[in-house]
Amino acid sequence: MSHGAIARTAVKASPALPPLRPGPHVRRLDAIAVVATFGGLLFGYDTGVINGALEPMVRDFGLTPVAEGLITSSLLIGAAFGAATGGILSDRLGRKPALTIIAVVFFVATLGCVFAPGLGVMLPSRFILGMAVGSASVTVPVYLAELAPTERRGALSGRNELAIVVGQMLAFIINAVIFNLWGHHEGVWRYMLAICAIPAIVLFVGMLRQPESPRWLIAKGQVERALEVLMMVRDEARARAEIAEVEQLALEESESRSNGLRALRIPWVFRLVIAGTGLAVAQQLTGVNSIMYYGTQLLGEAGFSAEAAIIANIANGVIAVVGTALCLFVFIDKISRRKMILFGFCATTIVHVFIMIAASVLPAGVGRAYVVLGLFVTFMFFVQLCLNAPIWVALAELFPLHLRGLGMGISVFFMWIANASIAFVFPIVVARAGLQGMFGIFAALGLLVIVFLWKMLPNTSGRSLEELEESFAEGDFR
Image: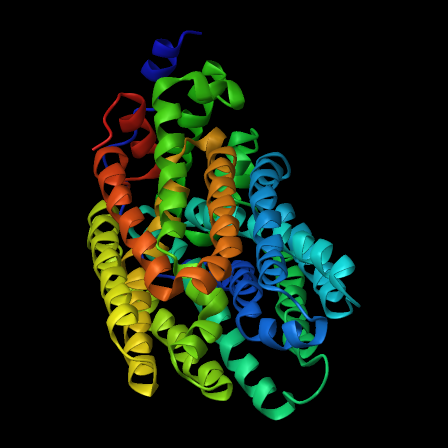
């Protein structure tokens, strides 16, 4: 079938679905979301724990700046490959089995990191742990988006981002407590890393009792099972209306054979992949994870003592949770994703400029340290309020049904590659050019991102996933 025919066979979504009604199905959906977002919690804890664990690890292993970058970036490189393979795994096996396998990998890789005698074991263990992080970063948002009703999709899918920042905040708090109580012990970083095993067990046990994604089931021809799942999380009228809409889409996609890598040759699909990949990479170009990974060391360079820096760094974690909560419970389903994301990049780019100026002109000391901390907190607030949750939700919404895992996998693969590259070069650039040099680079990149997204990013809020696909297939990317 020709590409034009594929576009013409896109689903004609129903103009309106029955309204959502209250009932026990709402509580069931919320409970499913809590269990699934333990994947996000693990994502957050494992990426955030290095912030406090790295300094004692440097002391114990005698690490150079290059070795520090390798330890941090090895997890992120693994996450890139985990994102690519995790998307394929969830498309083939299902979202539920994929998350169950991911929980096992989290647990095993955590043990490898905790008991690593040196870099020879630590680096491959961090890489495998990163594969679990990357797989979770793809699978959890898709699972939630496919279970969520249109009216709640932003808030429900975005809970994964809330879980991520809660995990990072917990990592910062636990690091501070462990460091201040047992910081004099050799291998104190092992205690910090070991905590990750607990949520991995919770995710594994919890996912055994959760349903499969109804949209994935329909894509595999299991319509009756899909209806059973939707009846668990919707009232009957809404469930039957949704099942008809999604079933029609799956049938037309199957007839068009638009799934698989061959679909990238279709212009509108390729455009979505470019937009999704650019959006995912843009998130990393803010430098948000540089603060999450190296915040304690940056605050030390800004003027705090080692003990004060690890405590002050908790402020970044707390404000991340506050900003994400405001985003999810106040703004995300009221303001278009596109507007929020563009405003967020404008705001963070301005803060980058202020950090560059403060680091350049203020004399070293406690005053400079508090100014830099205040700017870091302001930056983190705008990132979490306007960027992280809307970006993850938009990525889960962009792609057509049969390509959702693959599209997310490609986009998030490049996101983690960007993340790993920045994490590796960050300590090296800061050592040579200082904070002002690094954040000057982030400001310049922010301007490029704003131009790209203005031209390429469609709005994905306010319509069902099926309506979005119909619109994109017809060439409407508004």
